[in-house]
Image 1 (cartoon, helix red, strand yellow):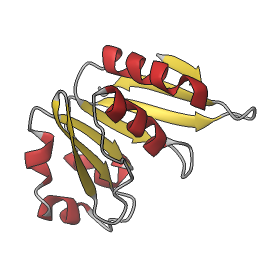
Image 2 (spheres, helix red, strand yellow):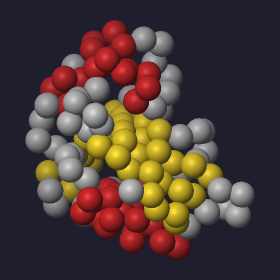
Image 3 (spheres, one colour):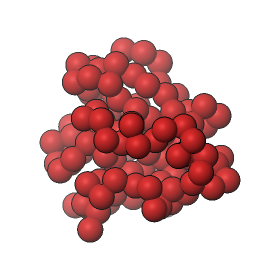
Image 4 (cartoon, one colour):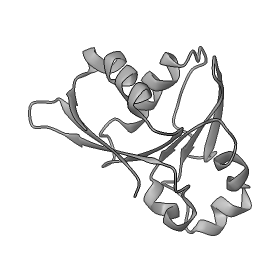
Length: 137
C-alpha cells in the first residue's frame, strides 16, 4: 500500500497504518529528516500516549504507556553493531505483545522479528511524503 500525505493529514495516516498493520512490529526506513519520528509521534498519540514523544537517539529506546499497553520506540542510528542491541535485551522487547516502532532497522537486520511491517518513507519534491507499507516476507 502506498500513501501520499502531508503534516495536515498525519492523524489520518496514523489511522490507516494502525488499521492495516498485520502485526505490532513497525520498521521505519527512510533518509535522515524524512519524518520517521513525526509519523511515530502520530501513531503513539492515536494509541493514546499523552507523554512528550521524541526520538531515542542516545538512549536507544523510549517506552510510552498507551491505551493498548506499552509502546517501545527504538532508534538504532548510532549503534555500531548488533551486539549493542543484544546487550540491551532487545529480544524481551520484540517478543512482548506490545507495539514496537523501530527507526533505522537496517542496523539490526538479523535480529528483526519476522512478523514485521516495513514502512518506507520518501520525501517528494512538493514537500509531501510518500509512505509505502508492506509486510516483511
